[in-house]
Amino acid sequence: MTLSEYLNSIQNKRIAVIGLGVSNKPWIELLLRSGCCVTVCDQRSAEAMGEEYAHFVALGAEMKLGEKYLDGLDHDIIFRTPGLLPFDEHLQTAQSSGSVLTSEMELFFSLCPCRVLAVTGSDGKTTTTTIISELLKEAGYRVHLGGNIGKPLLCELPDMHEDDFVVLELSSFQLHSMNCHPHVAVITNLTPNHLDKHKDFQDYIDAKRAIFAQQDKRDILVLNRNDEHSEYYAAFANSRLLYFSDCGNVEDGAIYEEGALYRVHAGNKSKIMDAVDIRIPGHHNILNYLAAFLATQEYVDDDCCRRVAMRFAGVEHRLEQVRLRRGVLYINDSIASSPTRTIAGLRAMKRKPIVIAGGYDKHIPFEPLGDALCQLAAAVILCGDTAEKIQKAICNSPYYAASALEYRIIDDFTEAVHAAAEQAQEGDIVLLSPACAAFDRFKNFAERGKTFKKIVMELPE
Image (cartoon, rainbow, N blue to C red; front, side, top):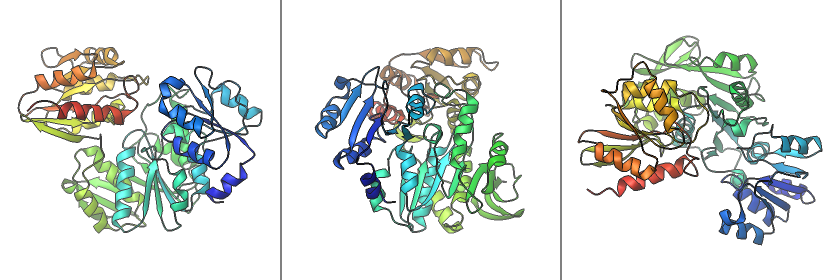
């Protein structure tokens, strides 16, 4: 079925779209312009929406807003926003009464004519997804990059062809209870995350299973040999399993060993490249490249792999070098929205940085972060809702010594950046690596990162 045929098939249906966010806006517009009856449900008020409210009303949308935006859901088709998980009582009531619950991403999978490579995990999703896209483009393919990485692709289906590739980053929110069938699926790693939304950690782990649940023996599942959850996933998989590792314990896959990256087939190694030639820093990025090399091995040769790794400068907001000012290097790692991401970033630094951390509370333990900050940071400035929790983790760490690590709590984000700049001396690094989501102060991590960059670029010479 094509997108046009699908739109024609739902002309007489009552449709609800929950959440007027990035992924749903183009889809809502297309539904309305196609003559569909659409109710937009959003927790915000009309005033908070501003011009968006007037725009969608003018297109013919019925708007259901405010605290009770989910009350009375009885539509034929309900498209949920990723942040509202399927076990919400309003959604379950609607389903039990006959409503079809789906999402923009689930519909995309059912209509997509291309080969799909999809990536999920706790850390490294965005970088790995982007590397896969760069590898395929380097090999001469036409590539559509999207999903959780920030670009919805559903409305672009008419421009996609059978020989193209779609590369998707998928979050646990998108995957939860979703039917999808990527030709290649990658799970980078699993650590506690988004525990403010999921029922528990097991629910988060199981949500990721959807990325490979519909695969068969013709498909590929790439797993991290060193992640304790990979064995759990492998037990459910019907697809061909490939593993990546930095410990060498792989029969089929890719490994990092003695400073180099290798492919492994039936236990036999063949060198791809030296790790020192990878442009983006950090041991975690070696693992990201191993995963990406495996995901694309049927389409990309070793020469392409080397060219991309030596050229690719990294993803915006991920250890992004912003400015060298008065001998101080400012680095934007706003995408580090969990403790494990921040710890990986700290380990990638050439010297101990002044760290700006804190943000929205996802109910993830901060004890490992406290240990890492005590060992790997020169100083810490905390802001956001989790400032006091991170402070407690620092002070309770067995590695904490007041004489060795100074920390401060500064609630205002701009003041926190200015304080770091005033403290820094020539040769220092100022690292924004929050270890938390951005929703306490910003729309998302990208807005937080752009704000950091703006403040830094406006600092006087």
